[in-house]
Figure 1: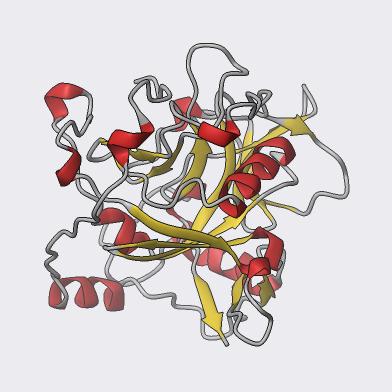
Figure 2 (figure 1 turned 180 degrees about the horizontal axis):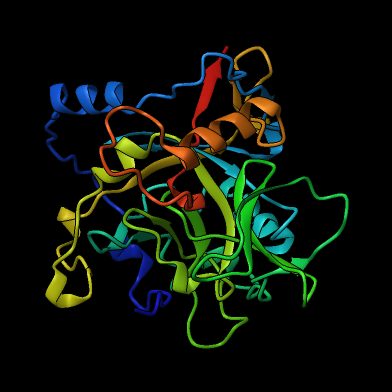
Length: 304
C-alpha cells in the first residue's frame, strides 16, 4: 500500500486536538511476561547511551508524549529538513490525517507551505554505503527481506555484503517520510509504523528516526476508515500534533535527557541470545532458534 504525500490543504488539518479512550489488559500480560522472562542468571545487563540533544525530539499529542530519536547517519538530508520544520513550528497543530490500523499513522500535510514554499523535495535516502566503522550487531542471517539484519546504534537495520549497502527497517515505531511515486518526492509528510512491520517498504522510503518512548500514545492516535485508505475527512475527528520541539532548543537547565540501550554492549548480546533460544519452561514446543529484529524490545529512559 503506497504511502503518498497528502494533496489536501494544510489549513484543513489544523485545529483542536482530539483524544481517544483506552483500555488495559494487565493481568494476563503480566502473567505471560513472567512466564517467558529471560532465564540466564549470569546475563549481563545492557548498558545505555545518551541520545544527542540535536537528535532528540519531543512530540506533544493529546494522546500523550512521544519521544523520537533521529538518525542523521542514515538519512542526513531528511533529518536536516525535519529539524528545520520543527524549528519553524511547521508541524504544530497539524493532524494525523491518514491512519490505518495495523499499518501507519501519517501526518505533516505539506500541501500549503506558506512561507516555506521554497522548501525543497528531499533526495531518496533509502540506503547508505556500509563502512567498517558502523557498529553492526547481527540478529539474523538471512531473513525474508534481507541478507542480514541486526542493529546499528540502537536502530534495527539490514545490510547486503554483496552490494555494500545498509538500510533501516520498518519496525513498529519507525519514523519515515512519505512520498509520491518519485523516489525524490518527500517533503514534509511523515509516518510512524503502528502495526506489524511492513518490511516490504524497506529500502524504498526515507526512514529517519524511531520512537523510543510513547508508543502507547502513538497507538491511541485515531484511526481512519479502512474503506477509505485510512483518510480522516472529518477535520474534528483527527488526532493532532500540539507541538514538536528539539531537545537542543530547550534550555539546558530545563532539558530532559534520553537514554537508549547500547546495542553494541555484551548485555544486549545476551538479551538477543535469550530471545533466540527461548529456553523458558513456558515453551512446551520450543520455537526455531530464529529472531526477527523487529521483535527485539527496544526501550528508552528519560531523566532530568
